[in-house]
Length: 282
Image (tube, rainbow, N blue to C red; front, side, top):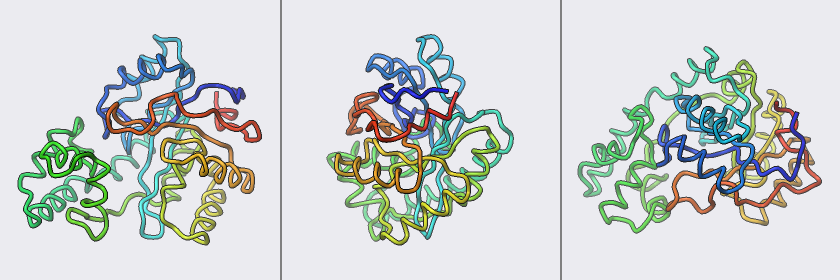
């Protein structure tokens, strides 16, 4: 068990295997150089980078936790559940993620059709160019294409004007069910964490329902200190962790040196009144 609250742990980031731009090895080096001593690669719905990440961490003397970020549809919106301490070879998890990935290709083509109607041609081919794993083509790859074309200055501007609800290029997708995602994580020997809860646009009652249902299904943690949260939200979700008895997680959600707001390993440490998620992991 690892219980040190002052541990520099970064348990949420993405490689080129999903929608990041660095390899698992480059991420490991960057994390270690920034002082991270407990690390997890959590690519979206994909385990293909896990062995590389684990091997790279081991070579550096950095403790590693197998990880994944699962896309879930809850109350008509997409939320993300991080699995930590998972066995990446577990057949139930591997098959569940395969099913979750299905449909990304068709969705991407529909997104490109919408962008074409908005006067932006060749978006599918352009987005594919940025996708290291063609099975995981995502909105982020389209966003990078729109920036490359000079249509938007940066990806933040993209997500204000394109690829979101009521804007060109938005196509909803039905992801995994919450109960399935947690079942896959538990079957793989891992623990489940709600990623960046401050990002979701649910009302207070819906968030309460999410926390209650997540806990009923065996979910253990929420991200408190994350690149998606403001300092005020650190306090808000720290209180929610205490209220519901959740363990607290910390992760940058790092994707790219230029796009990401927060680098690996530079977030504040968890408050000392919380119990870290790594206290239940080996």
